[in-house]
Image (tube, rainbow over all chains, first blue to last red; front, side):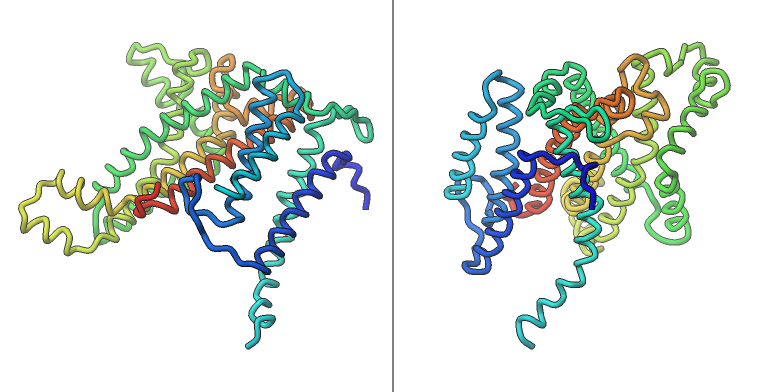
Amino acid sequence: MNLEWMAWTLPTAIFFTTIVCILIAMTIWQVISPCIKRRGFIPLSTTRGDRLFIGLLSSAYIHLAWLGLTPFSIWIAFGFSLAWMVVVMRWG
Amino acid sequence: MNKWEDNKAWFLVLPVFIIVAFSAIIPLMTVVNYSIQDIFGPGERVFVGVEWFREVLSDSRLHEALLKQFLFSGLVLLIEIPLGIIIALMMPKKGWSASLSLVLIALPLLIPWNVIGTIWIVFTRPDIGLLGATINGMGIPFDHTSSPMQAWITLMLMEVWHWTPLVALLAYAGLRAIPEAYFQAAKIDGASSWAVFKYIQLPKMRGVLTIALLLRFMDSFLIYAEPFVLTGGGPGNSTTFLSIYLVKIAVGQFDLGPAAAFSLIYFLIILLLSWLFYQVLQNVGKGEA
Protein backbone atom coordinates (compact mmCIF):
# COMPACT_ATOMS: atom_id res chain seq x y z
CA MET A 1 0.00 0.00 0.00
CA ASN A 2 1.40 3.40 -0.99
CA LEU A 3 1.17 5.81 1.94
CA GLU A 4 3.05 8.65 0.25
CA TRP A 5 -0.11 10.80 0.29
CA MET A 6 -0.04 10.75 4.10
CA ALA A 7 3.35 12.52 4.00
CA TRP A 8 4.81 10.57 6.94
CA THR A 9 7.85 11.90 8.75
CA LEU A 10 9.98 10.26 11.44
CA PRO A 11 8.88 12.67 14.26
CA THR A 12 5.15 12.14 13.55
CA ALA A 13 5.65 8.37 13.27
CA ILE A 14 7.37 8.39 16.67
CA PHE A 15 4.60 10.60 18.08
CA PHE A 16 1.76 8.30 16.97
CA THR A 17 3.65 5.14 17.91
CA THR A 18 4.13 6.59 21.40
CA ILE A 19 0.41 7.37 21.68
CA VAL A 20 -0.50 3.82 20.58
CA CYS A 21 2.03 2.35 23.05
CA ILE A 22 0.59 4.47 25.87
CA LEU A 23 -2.94 3.27 25.04
CA ILE A 24 -1.83 -0.38 24.94
CA ALA A 25 0.06 0.03 28.23
CA MET A 26 -2.95 1.71 29.86
CA THR A 27 -5.20 -1.16 28.69
CA ILE A 28 -2.84 -3.80 30.09
CA TRP A 29 -2.54 -1.81 33.33
CA GLN A 30 -6.34 -1.64 33.57
CA VAL A 31 -6.70 -5.41 33.03
CA ILE A 32 -4.00 -6.24 35.59
CA SER A 33 -5.09 -3.66 38.15
CA PRO A 34 -8.53 -2.13 37.53
CA CYS A 35 -8.70 1.45 38.75
CA ILE A 36 -11.49 3.13 40.67
CA LYS A 37 -12.47 6.78 40.39
CA ARG A 38 -10.76 9.11 42.82
CA ARG A 39 -10.47 12.80 43.49
CA GLY A 40 -7.13 14.61 43.50
CA PHE A 41 -6.30 18.26 42.89
CA ILE A 42 -8.43 18.20 39.70
CA PRO A 43 -11.93 19.18 40.88
CA LEU A 44 -13.50 16.03 39.39
CA SER A 45 -13.67 12.34 40.19
CA THR A 46 -11.37 10.83 37.58
CA THR A 47 -10.21 7.43 36.40
CA ARG A 48 -6.69 6.73 35.18
CA GLY A 49 -7.88 7.16 31.58
CA ASP A 50 -9.52 10.50 32.42
CA ARG A 51 -6.27 11.74 33.92
CA LEU A 52 -4.33 10.58 30.85
CA PHE A 53 -6.73 12.49 28.59
CA ILE A 54 -6.57 15.62 30.78
CA GLY A 55 -2.78 15.37 30.89
CA LEU A 56 -2.41 14.95 27.12
CA LEU A 57 -4.88 17.73 26.29
CA SER A 58 -3.31 20.17 28.74
CA SER A 59 0.14 19.21 27.42
CA ALA A 60 -1.02 20.16 23.91
CA TYR A 61 -2.09 23.55 25.26
CA ILE A 62 1.24 23.97 27.10
CA HIS A 63 3.01 23.44 23.76
CA LEU A 64 0.70 25.89 21.97
CA ALA A 65 1.12 28.54 24.67
CA TRP A 66 4.89 28.08 24.52
CA LEU A 67 4.95 28.46 20.74
CA GLY A 68 2.61 31.44 20.77
CA LEU A 69 4.19 33.35 23.65
CA THR A 70 7.91 32.54 23.61
CA PRO A 71 10.63 32.29 20.95
CA PHE A 72 12.38 29.45 22.82
CA SER A 73 12.82 25.81 21.81
CA ILE A 74 9.75 23.54 21.87
CA TRP A 75 11.79 20.95 23.79
CA ILE A 76 11.54 23.09 26.95
CA ALA A 77 7.74 22.94 26.67
CA PHE A 78 8.05 19.20 26.10
CA GLY A 79 9.98 18.91 29.37
CA PHE A 80 7.34 20.90 31.24
CA SER A 81 4.62 18.73 29.70
CA LEU A 82 6.30 15.51 30.80
CA ALA A 83 6.56 16.82 34.36
CA TRP A 84 2.92 17.97 34.19
CA MET A 85 1.82 14.51 32.95
CA VAL A 86 3.49 12.85 35.92
CA VAL A 87 1.84 15.31 38.33
CA VAL A 88 -1.63 14.81 36.79
CA MET A 89 -1.36 11.01 36.69
CA ARG A 90 -0.07 10.78 40.27
CA TRP A 91 -1.91 13.54 42.12
CA GLY A 92 -4.65 14.65 39.71
CA MET B 1 -21.30 -18.33 30.20
CA ASN B 2 -17.57 -17.63 30.52
CA LYS B 3 -15.82 -14.29 30.28
CA TRP B 4 -14.57 -14.84 26.70
CA GLU B 5 -18.12 -15.43 25.42
CA ASP B 6 -19.26 -12.22 27.14
CA ASN B 7 -16.52 -10.29 25.41
CA LYS B 8 -17.63 -11.43 21.94
CA ALA B 9 -20.00 -8.49 21.91
CA TRP B 10 -16.95 -6.29 21.28
CA PHE B 11 -16.78 -7.69 17.74
CA LEU B 12 -20.13 -6.02 17.05
CA VAL B 13 -18.53 -2.60 17.44
CA LEU B 14 -15.58 -3.53 15.23
CA PRO B 15 -17.19 -2.08 12.04
CA VAL B 16 -17.59 1.25 13.84
CA PHE B 17 -13.93 1.20 14.86
CA ILE B 18 -12.91 0.53 11.25
CA ILE B 19 -15.15 3.31 9.89
CA VAL B 20 -13.90 5.79 12.49
CA ALA B 21 -10.31 4.79 11.73
CA PHE B 22 -10.75 5.54 8.04
CA SER B 23 -12.94 8.61 8.37
CA ALA B 24 -11.31 10.32 11.35
CA ILE B 25 -8.03 8.90 12.64
CA ILE B 26 -6.18 8.46 9.34
CA PRO B 27 -7.16 11.97 8.09
CA LEU B 28 -6.14 13.38 11.49
CA MET B 29 -2.75 11.65 11.23
CA THR B 30 -2.33 13.11 7.74
CA VAL B 31 -3.14 16.59 9.02
CA VAL B 32 -0.53 16.18 11.77
CA ASN B 33 2.00 15.09 9.13
CA TYR B 34 1.17 18.08 6.91
CA SER B 35 1.37 20.53 9.81
CA ILE B 36 5.14 20.14 10.18
CA GLN B 37 6.04 20.20 6.47
CA ASP B 38 5.98 22.58 3.56
CA ILE B 39 4.05 20.73 0.86
CA PHE B 40 4.88 21.71 -2.73
CA GLY B 41 3.24 18.78 -4.50
CA PRO B 42 3.12 14.98 -4.56
CA GLY B 43 6.43 13.76 -3.14
CA GLU B 44 7.82 17.30 -2.86
CA ARG B 45 7.91 18.37 0.75
CA VAL B 46 10.30 19.91 3.26
CA PHE B 47 10.33 19.37 7.01
CA VAL B 48 9.82 22.70 8.82
CA GLY B 49 9.21 21.58 12.41
CA VAL B 50 6.81 23.78 14.39
CA GLU B 51 7.25 26.79 12.09
CA TRP B 52 3.63 26.74 10.85
CA PHE B 53 2.31 26.63 14.39
CA ARG B 54 4.34 29.73 15.32
CA GLU B 55 3.13 31.48 12.17
CA VAL B 56 -0.53 30.60 12.71
CA LEU B 57 -0.48 31.45 16.42
CA SER B 58 0.91 34.92 15.68
CA ASP B 59 -1.58 35.55 12.84
CA SER B 60 -3.75 38.53 13.80
CA ARG B 61 -6.49 37.44 11.38
CA LEU B 62 -6.77 34.12 13.22
CA HIS B 63 -7.12 36.02 16.52
CA GLU B 64 -9.84 38.18 14.94
CA ALA B 65 -11.64 35.14 13.52
CA LEU B 66 -11.51 33.38 16.90
CA LEU B 67 -12.87 36.45 18.68
CA LYS B 68 -15.66 36.80 16.12
CA GLN B 69 -16.45 33.11 16.47
CA PHE B 70 -16.84 33.36 20.26
CA LEU B 71 -18.87 36.58 19.90
CA PHE B 72 -21.15 35.00 17.31
CA SER B 73 -21.70 31.81 19.36
CA GLY B 74 -22.29 33.84 22.54
CA LEU B 75 -24.85 36.15 20.91
CA VAL B 76 -26.62 33.27 19.20
CA LEU B 77 -26.98 31.41 22.50
CA LEU B 78 -28.17 34.54 24.32
CA ILE B 79 -31.02 34.84 21.82
CA GLU B 80 -31.83 31.21 20.99
CA ILE B 81 -32.05 29.72 24.47
CA PRO B 82 -34.55 32.22 26.01
CA LEU B 83 -36.50 32.44 22.74
CA GLY B 84 -36.71 28.65 22.48
CA ILE B 85 -38.01 28.43 26.06
CA ILE B 86 -40.64 31.13 25.40
CA ILE B 87 -41.82 29.34 22.24
CA ALA B 88 -41.98 26.00 24.09
CA LEU B 89 -44.04 27.58 26.88
CA MET B 90 -46.46 29.05 24.34
CA MET B 91 -46.93 25.86 22.31
CA PRO B 92 -50.21 23.93 22.71
CA LYS B 93 -49.97 21.06 25.20
CA LYS B 94 -52.30 18.51 23.60
CA GLY B 95 -54.61 17.81 20.68
CA TRP B 96 -54.15 18.29 16.93
CA SER B 97 -52.82 21.83 17.41
CA ALA B 98 -49.89 20.43 19.44
CA SER B 99 -48.99 18.01 16.62
CA LEU B 100 -49.37 20.73 13.99
CA SER B 101 -47.21 23.21 15.90
CA LEU B 102 -44.49 20.56 16.36
CA VAL B 103 -44.40 19.89 12.62
CA LEU B 104 -44.39 23.59 11.72
CA ILE B 105 -41.69 24.49 14.19
CA ALA B 106 -39.46 21.64 12.99
CA LEU B 107 -39.58 22.76 9.34
CA PRO B 108 -36.44 24.99 9.36
CA LEU B 109 -34.45 22.07 10.79
CA LEU B 110 -35.21 19.96 7.72
CA ILE B 111 -33.67 22.37 5.22
CA PRO B 112 -30.04 21.71 4.16
CA TRP B 113 -27.59 24.31 5.45
CA ASN B 114 -26.45 25.61 2.04
CA VAL B 115 -30.09 25.96 0.96
CA ILE B 116 -30.73 28.05 4.09
CA GLY B 117 -27.99 30.45 2.93
CA THR B 118 -29.50 30.65 -0.56
CA ILE B 119 -32.99 31.28 0.83
CA TRP B 120 -31.67 34.13 2.96
CA ILE B 121 -29.71 35.64 0.06
CA VAL B 122 -32.95 35.97 -1.86
CA PHE B 123 -34.97 36.95 1.22
CA THR B 124 -32.61 39.80 2.16
CA ARG B 125 -31.78 41.17 -1.31
CA PRO B 126 -32.17 44.95 -1.11
CA ASP B 127 -33.92 45.16 -4.49
CA ILE B 128 -36.30 42.19 -4.68
CA GLY B 129 -35.99 40.33 -1.35
CA LEU B 130 -39.06 40.37 0.87
CA LEU B 131 -37.12 41.47 3.95
CA GLY B 132 -34.48 43.64 2.24
CA ALA B 133 -36.91 45.48 -0.06
CA THR B 134 -39.40 46.00 2.82
CA ILE B 135 -36.75 47.54 5.09
CA ASN B 136 -35.51 49.75 2.23
CA GLY B 137 -39.14 50.67 1.45
CA MET B 138 -39.49 51.91 5.04
CA GLY B 139 -36.69 54.38 4.35
CA ILE B 140 -34.00 52.46 6.26
CA PRO B 141 -31.00 51.74 4.01
CA PHE B 142 -30.33 47.99 4.10
CA ASP B 143 -27.68 46.06 2.21
CA HIS B 144 -25.89 43.27 4.04
CA THR B 145 -23.32 43.00 1.26
CA SER B 146 -21.86 46.43 2.03
CA SER B 147 -22.49 46.97 5.75
CA PRO B 148 -20.63 44.74 8.25
CA MET B 149 -23.19 45.47 10.97
CA GLN B 150 -26.09 44.52 8.70
CA ALA B 151 -24.23 41.39 7.56
CA TRP B 152 -23.92 40.34 11.22
CA ILE B 153 -27.57 41.11 11.93
CA THR B 154 -28.64 39.11 8.86
CA LEU B 155 -26.45 36.17 9.86
CA MET B 156 -27.78 36.24 13.41
CA LEU B 157 -31.37 36.37 12.17
CA MET B 158 -30.73 33.45 9.84
CA GLU B 159 -29.06 31.38 12.55
CA VAL B 160 -31.80 32.15 15.06
CA TRP B 161 -34.51 31.30 12.51
CA HIS B 162 -32.75 28.07 11.59
CA TRP B 163 -31.87 26.72 15.02
CA THR B 164 -34.23 28.16 17.64
CA PRO B 165 -36.72 25.39 16.73
CA LEU B 166 -34.25 22.81 18.03
CA VAL B 167 -34.07 24.57 21.40
CA ALA B 168 -37.86 24.94 21.42
CA LEU B 169 -38.40 21.24 20.69
CA LEU B 170 -35.97 20.17 23.41
CA ALA B 171 -37.52 22.59 25.92
CA TYR B 172 -41.00 21.39 24.91
CA ALA B 173 -39.97 17.77 25.53
CA GLY B 174 -38.62 18.80 28.95
CA LEU B 175 -41.83 20.62 29.81
CA ARG B 176 -44.03 17.70 28.77
CA ALA B 177 -42.04 15.36 31.00
CA ILE B 178 -42.94 17.28 34.18
CA PRO B 179 -45.56 15.32 36.18
CA GLU B 180 -48.94 17.06 36.48
CA ALA B 181 -48.80 16.72 40.29
CA TYR B 182 -46.24 19.57 40.48
CA PHE B 183 -48.64 21.98 38.77
CA GLN B 184 -51.56 20.84 40.92
CA ALA B 185 -49.52 21.45 44.09
CA ALA B 186 -48.50 24.89 42.80
CA LYS B 187 -52.15 25.70 42.06
CA ILE B 188 -53.20 24.71 45.58
CA ASP B 189 -50.44 26.96 46.98
CA GLY B 190 -51.66 29.81 44.78
CA ALA B 191 -48.31 30.12 42.97
CA SER B 192 -48.07 32.75 40.21
CA SER B 193 -47.12 31.81 36.62
CA TRP B 194 -43.66 33.26 37.22
CA ALA B 195 -43.22 31.19 40.40
CA VAL B 196 -44.30 28.04 38.54
CA PHE B 197 -41.75 28.79 35.82
CA LYS B 198 -38.96 29.68 38.24
CA TYR B 199 -39.40 26.88 40.78
CA ILE B 200 -40.86 24.03 38.72
CA GLN B 201 -40.45 24.36 34.97
CA LEU B 202 -36.95 25.85 34.74
CA PRO B 203 -35.29 23.45 37.22
CA LYS B 204 -37.00 20.48 35.56
CA MET B 205 -35.79 21.61 32.13
CA ARG B 206 -32.18 21.95 33.27
CA GLY B 207 -31.08 18.66 31.69
CA VAL B 208 -32.55 19.31 28.25
CA LEU B 209 -31.44 22.94 28.30
CA THR B 210 -27.86 21.84 28.99
CA ILE B 211 -28.05 19.54 25.98
CA ALA B 212 -29.51 22.39 23.89
CA LEU B 213 -26.75 24.71 25.07
CA LEU B 214 -24.09 22.12 24.20
CA LEU B 215 -25.45 21.33 20.77
CA ARG B 216 -26.01 24.94 19.82
CA PHE B 217 -22.64 26.12 21.06
CA MET B 218 -20.71 23.42 19.22
CA ASP B 219 -22.76 23.84 16.06
CA SER B 220 -22.50 27.62 15.98
CA PHE B 221 -18.77 27.38 16.72
CA LEU B 222 -18.30 25.18 13.65
CA ILE B 223 -20.59 27.22 11.39
CA TYR B 224 -19.44 27.32 7.76
CA ALA B 225 -22.03 26.73 5.02
CA GLU B 226 -24.58 29.42 5.89
CA PRO B 227 -22.22 32.43 6.22
CA PHE B 228 -20.15 31.18 3.29
CA VAL B 229 -23.22 31.17 1.04
CA LEU B 230 -24.78 34.35 2.45
CA THR B 231 -21.80 36.68 2.87
CA GLY B 232 -18.73 34.72 1.74
CA GLY B 233 -17.01 36.01 4.89
CA GLY B 234 -17.59 39.66 3.94
CA PRO B 235 -18.00 42.52 3.60
CA GLY B 236 -14.24 42.72 4.08
CA ASN B 237 -13.50 40.11 6.71
CA SER B 238 -16.37 41.06 8.99
CA THR B 239 -18.03 37.63 8.92
CA THR B 240 -14.91 35.54 8.34
CA PHE B 241 -15.26 32.97 11.09
CA LEU B 242 -12.70 30.30 11.90
CA SER B 243 -13.92 27.70 9.43
CA ILE B 244 -14.21 30.21 6.57
CA TYR B 245 -10.70 31.51 7.26
CA LEU B 246 -9.38 27.95 7.39
CA VAL B 247 -10.88 27.12 3.98
CA LYS B 248 -9.42 30.35 2.56
CA ILE B 249 -5.94 29.27 3.65
CA ALA B 250 -6.30 25.61 2.62
CA VAL B 251 -8.24 25.90 -0.64
CA GLY B 252 -7.91 29.56 -1.62
CA GLN B 253 -4.17 29.95 -1.02
CA PHE B 254 -3.35 26.21 -1.07
CA ASP B 255 -1.09 26.68 1.98
CA LEU B 256 -1.52 23.13 3.22
CA GLY B 257 1.08 23.33 6.01
CA PRO B 258 -0.34 26.43 7.77
CA ALA B 259 -3.88 25.15 7.12
CA ALA B 260 -3.02 21.83 8.77
CA ALA B 261 -1.52 23.62 11.80
CA PHE B 262 -4.60 25.84 11.97
CA SER B 263 -6.85 22.75 11.76
CA LEU B 264 -5.09 21.12 14.68
CA ILE B 265 -5.41 24.26 16.82
CA TYR B 266 -9.11 24.47 15.86
CA PHE B 267 -9.49 20.79 16.74
CA LEU B 268 -7.86 21.32 20.14
CA ILE B 269 -10.19 24.25 20.89
CA ILE B 270 -13.22 22.13 19.98
CA LEU B 271 -11.87 19.16 21.95
CA LEU B 272 -11.37 21.28 25.08
CA LEU B 273 -14.79 22.93 24.84
CA SER B 274 -16.51 19.59 24.15
CA TRP B 275 -14.82 18.03 27.15
CA LEU B 276 -15.74 20.95 29.41
CA PHE B 277 -19.37 20.86 28.25
CA TYR B 278 -19.41 17.07 28.65
CA GLN B 279 -18.23 17.40 32.23
CA VAL B 280 -20.91 20.01 32.94
CA LEU B 281 -23.51 17.75 31.32
CA GLN B 282 -22.39 14.77 33.36
CA ASN B 283 -22.55 16.72 36.59
CA VAL B 284 -25.86 18.50 36.07
CA GLY B 285 -27.87 18.02 39.21
CA LYS B 286 -24.99 16.44 41.13
CA GLY B 287 -23.72 19.74 42.47
CA GLU B 288 -20.23 19.03 41.17
CA ALA B 289 -20.12 21.28 38.12
